[in-house]
Length: 353
Image 1 (cartoon, rainbow, N blue to C red):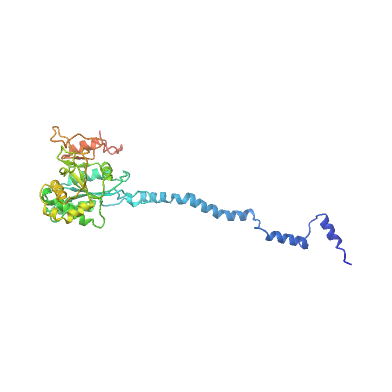
Image 2 (tube, rainbow, N blue to C red):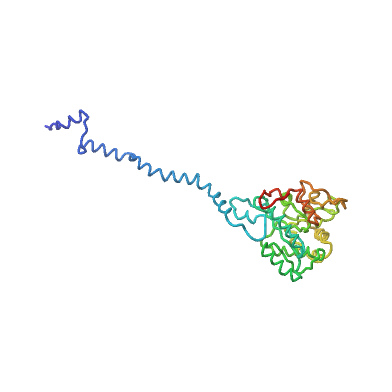
């Protein structure tokens, strides 16, 4: 006959009183609870688990998006680039905040070594337009081009310019005569100098023309990148770019045409003469420059008191280039019209009435 359960055990179970850990029923129940599901964590344990997750979320949503802004701030604190001024010389240093240029343009200003004052003026005029913050959509380089140095003072003063600005191209194999083959030598030399990093367009410009670079870039931005010939048509009363040629004050050629001129017997054999007329002749004989664009009246001559021809007219808000600025007063008149000194701030160091 089985023995009766202990009296104290039945009593404890019946009145639901707490049993010690040694009780077999409670031990089994506790073990089942321990092995069923996840353990219950204390508040401090939860904090230790959640803290790294919160930190990761903070870095992902707040710190990482600011990384590029930090790079931009560090770049802004860096010393400015030295050397030749270019539209992208400072801006390209920070690819995180600068868009890729739409195209590359080289402006070769054909001038003479002795014209130090004119180059100083042009460096200011173009340098201000190429300064960071003007947001040109193209990379623009301006270079001053002349033939061999033939005076002792030039052999000292021009190297000083090169050391300070690094924006001079000295052509070998030409005499200082615009119609003596200088334009051909310039274009053929450029094709070799920049063969590894070509431009989209090369512009030949006189040293008495003022180009408004934002307007020029906007105009060229709509042009084809190949077989392109751009400028102000000659004769002055014509608006047809296929009738004759583009005026020598300033015209642009696509890079493929520059390369063709550098290797063409047509250009080599017809290099001496009226330079802008010869450029048109090369393209006509070679059946090149099928994409031609007339920029008149936005590229024009300075208006004389008594106009000489229809290439002259007043300044306009849409003006791209003004030619025949032969004197400082004419330059001052043009720069004043286009409000070039608007950024000048009041200062105790000067008073300009």
